[in-house]
Amino acid sequence: GENVGLHLPTLSVQEGDNSIINCAYSNSASDYFIWYKQESGKGPQFIIDIRSNMDKRQGQRVTVLLNKTVKHLSLQIAATQPGDSAVYFCAENRGTSYGKLTFGQGTILTVHP
Amino acid sequence: DAMVIQNPRYQVTQFGKPVTLSCSQTLNHNVMYWYQQKSSQAPKLLFHYYDKDFNNEADTPDNFQSRRPNTSFCFLDIRSPGLGDAAMYLCATSREEEQFFGPGTRLTVL
Image 1 (tube, rainbow over the protein chains, first blue to last red):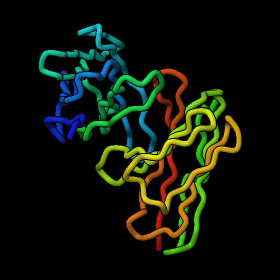
Image 2: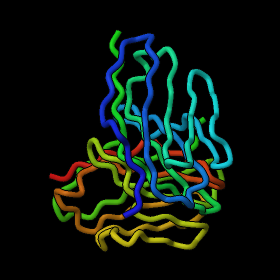
Image 3: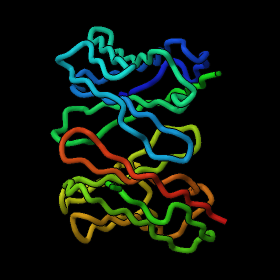
C-alpha cells in the first residue's frame, strides 16, 4: 500500500558532523511534506516543511531536499549537536486542504560528543 | 504560552477500566487529531475532528471514542483498555497544513 517510509532506522554521528536523514514516499498526490523532531517523552516538534513546487528549502542548520522524480525526501542537519539526538519523522499531506498527515517510520539520530 | 495541552501527562488505569484523556488548545484551530504512538513507532492516527465533523480511521478499534464539546477541547475515551492499548497518546491541531502537537499522555494499563 502507499506509505511514507525511511531507509535508515538509526543513524549515529559525531558532534560537528553533518547528518542526512532520508525518507521515501509513494503517493504522487502528496503536495506538502514536514519533518518533525521528537525527543524522548515529548510530542513531535516541527522542524521544517516543503511544498511540492520546491526542491529545496533551508532553515537554521537544516535543509530539506525534495526529489519528486524518485519520490524522495531528505533532511540535512549541519554541524550536528548532542541536542539534535531524537527521532525524526517525515510526514506527507496527501492533498488535503488542512493538516491531515501520513507519517513515515522514523529515524533515531544519536549524536556522540 | 502553551498551545496544545494534554492532561494528564501520565495516566495509569486497570485492564478493562474506562479512561478518558483530555486535550485543549489555545490556537483556535478547527481541526483536532488523536494519535496513538507505541515505542519506536510512528504516530498512528486514530481519528480527527474537522470542526464538529468526526472522521474515524478505518482501522481504529471501536474501543476508542472521541468527543469534541467545543473548539478548544477534545477527549479520547478508551472504553475497555487492554494491555495492548498502553502507549503514548498524542493530540494535535491544525488550521492549514501544519500540525501542532501536544506533549502527549503516557497511558499504562495494569
